[in-house]
Length: 480
Image 1 (spheres, rainbow, N blue to C red):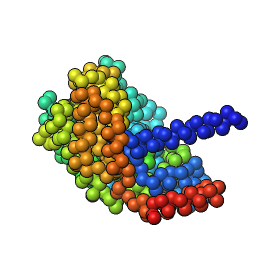
Image 2: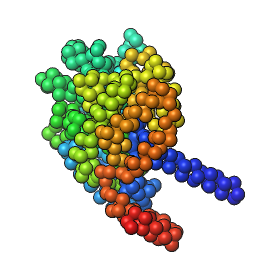
Image 3: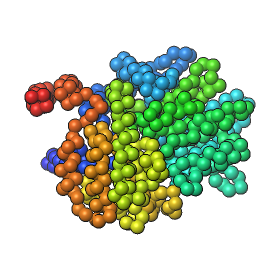
Image 4: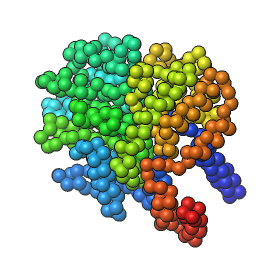
């Protein structure tokens, strides 16, 4: 028992210290992360966490296999409505628990879809060819054969490699697509599936160009857009479902306000030639990929969707302004910023810098971390290996939610330049500057959220007397 108590106290102390460091002393610029609001966090730990609500469509009716799920059933339906409103679409699948799982579900569904109607006794075939973004040019790991695409696409018998080709990029700007070469490749190869979207992502994808180019083909490829990094910028950055994409996927915790989950969405009316693909997506979600789909984070996703639909325009506009201002400020201070200066270097939340010459990307990222600036080292398109990255990838989304604006990112760029160019220790200055950005925006204010969170906490905690006292103190602190 003594060791148990020791372990508990040691773990809680370390958790507290980590919370304080990351939430109150650091600037988090990792583009794939975000801190959810207090109420989203409270939803995550509410009673649905750890419960089950498996369901599937059987003979035209949605059948649930557990009791006590009336509440979470309504939550899932309302979350579909809210996310359908966000994407302006009719079909939303919420059961993937990550963006990578969302992608794999679509890949599984594609294999099932292309095998519909095959003759009895014939082996199931894989996708004949997939087009995606090259990993070294910013493509996401999940859409590679080594990732979620594994085992869903044919191999070339001559090379033994999966039949995957990459979107071509411009020689003078490898972050932008070469649409002329893309047209030639499409005419030559006729893929089953095209997977747009990246993890190193600063420019739009050529969805409309491709959709217009292939619209008269007798057999249309499926156009998929993995929006994991830019899901929360849907509409202000791109609106792919209006541009010709058939299906979008993504994770809900990067630029979107949510917990760590995945989503699949599109428009699949009953008369659509892809209606059965949607049915296959649903069946590959459950029972094909999930059983318990993490109901606590599902509840949290609904809360995040409420926040996003309320604050979408203001948040997205500020993210775009901050990213461009951040990139310009870094460039003005002599930091080598990737992308085109004429575009302010970025059209998303991401800013990419080249650090080769100042050191290895891994070492530079560690140096920033020692100064309470959290970034992501990144191999750039001309790097030979991910083991020797020459880039740093940053995102403004989390600190935008904590109230930073253009001038604030100018100040932050000065700390970054000092660390990068002069190896200066700015840790204490960074900690002091972070004290200006501790209150989350684009959600209910602390005065409004604290009493609600207190009631939720009381409803789930058995130590009622302690929680009452804690909640009274919290409310007094934030309201008085």
